[in-house]
Each structure stands twice: as C-alpha cells, then as structure tokens.
Length: 374
Ligand SMILES: [Zn+2]
Image (cartoon, rainbow, N blue to C red; front, side, top):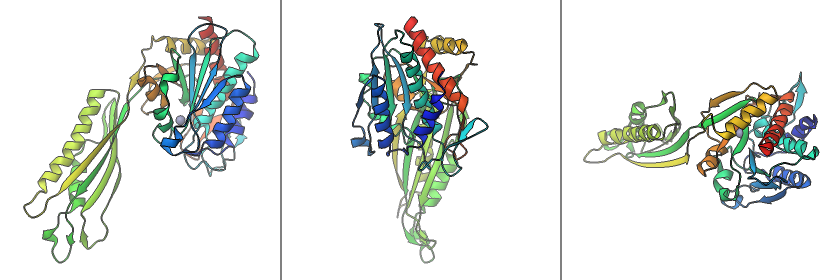
C-alpha cells in the first residue's frame, strides 16, 4: 500500500474545515475524486444548514455489473480546528497542542480515497463504488440529515469514523434531546419574596428527580446545560434546561424520556399556587434512530474477511455515540462504522499512528476487491 496516504492525510489536516466551514476541504476532495475518475456532485444542504459547502456524492462506475458498495466519512472537524500544524513523533501524527488534529474524520477520508486509488491503480475489474463525504457531522449530523439518501444505490456501506483499524461498530443508540423552560414569577427577593415563584427552585427539584446518568447497560441520560436568573435580589422567573437521552432500545428511550418529563411536571405542580404558578414548556427532538447489524450480515462478514486477509485483529462492538451511520441505516441502507486509527478525538491531544492510515487504506481496498469477487 502506498505510503503517500500519510502525506495526503497531512495535506488534508492542513485545510481548515471546522463544521459549517468545509468549503475549502470540499473543493479539494471534489477535485481529487474527479481526478480519480468519479462523477461528483455537491448538494446544497448548506442552504438549510448554514455552512459554506454541501455534501459530496461521488460515483465510480465499475466493470462488474452489481450494486455499488458505499464508503462514507465526514469533512468537518470539531473546534479548535483552525490552523492545524501536524507533525510526526515516533510514528505518531499529532497537532502542536493548540488544536485538534482532525484525524476525526480526515483519516477516514484519506483511507477511502487511497483505498479506491489502490484498486484503480491495479487496473483490475471492480464493482461500482459510491462515496459520501458529509458536512457538519459534528454538530448534529446536519449534512447527512439533509442529504437525499435515495441517491444511494449500494446494498450496504462502511462509515470510516471510529477508533482503531479493525474496530467494527455494528450498532449505535438512538438519541433524543430535550429543552425545558421552567417559568416562575418574578418578585423582589427582600421586600416581597412570598409573591414570587422561584424558577431555579422548581428546576432544582425537577432535576433532582430525573433519572440521569447510566440507566442500564444500553440506556443513558444527561442534563448538560442550565441557565436562568438575573440578580441575587430577584426571585427568578425563568430557567432553561437542556439534556439528552440515548438507548439502543427504542422502548427504553421513550420511557426514560417520559420519566424526565414527568419529573419536570411533578416539580412544577408542587409550585402551583393560587396567586402565581410555576409552568413549563417541553421541547423534544428525536435526533436519530438506533441501528444494529447482525454479526452474520454480509457487510459484517465481508469486513471480517477483509481484516483476516490483512492479518488485522477484528473487534466487533456496539457503540455509544451517534454518527452519519445512524442516518444512513435509518434510510434502509445497512452501514457499519469502521475504525481508522484516530485517537483521543475531540481533544487537543488527538493523534494517530501513521501506519494506521496505511492499514485503513488497505482495508478499504480489500473490501472493494472482495466485494467485487463475490
Ligand atoms: Zn467523526
């Protein structure tokens, strides 16, 4: 496998592409995919999501007449991701400590492109290949949510967006996010506090009664943001609470979400008086659906065979996060998430072993070759 994948990765991380600012990165990838012979389309999802570039869809025609195979990665990085200066120490690529590295997910992008390049360079016959590079994945899967998934014709796919090469994430939870506004009644805290209803007090009681943290082996929930009040001498009349719940089991997700809402409702009811009452607004958003591929699924088996051929240890697991794979799976296209070598993502200590890029590209090439021969 071509070590140029390492240089290519370094080129990509040098291009700033924090979420909603992927324009330069998308332009570069469009040119690179076209140069490899793909027909490439950029959609206009950013008109709805507010970024400066759309998702890229690339199609490589094949000489073997069968459904394409899909590879997916995202073009955006988290913050701080401006002016990334990468260097290699002892075989590990890292930033200068002021930014993330952007291996999440440019390792996936580089491995997909170099895996395809490897197959094309061999001149062998292969099945058609689809590539989807999304934008704004890190801020709520916005690109994937606005992509026209009916374009995809693959029977199954691989999202390269997990930790170690050889990791195969075959399931991920569904997620709900909620926003609660608790209202009370404002009053002077020293002169006539009995005329007020303290929204912070009501919120405290509500949160104390919520099921939070690890609910069971497949369900979690969290309150992550709270805000309210304006001065120490005013009984506060408004508090905003934001949180989430996740589960691999849809019924459990519904239950924990209802329990959270019930905690709010009960606390508010305890503060409903004749003269002034607490109240609340509840907003719930289903962010994405869960998925679970059976270990016997052809997409999983193909990946296991490709890893065995490359002598890379496989680790089949169920994940705890949401990614573009949740969105693609919910459209009926089975997609598992594969490791790329990325480490300590979403921190300025993020790094990646350079050889993982080489292994990841070899894995992509092996998937295409094995699929083509099936
Ligand atoms: Zn990612």
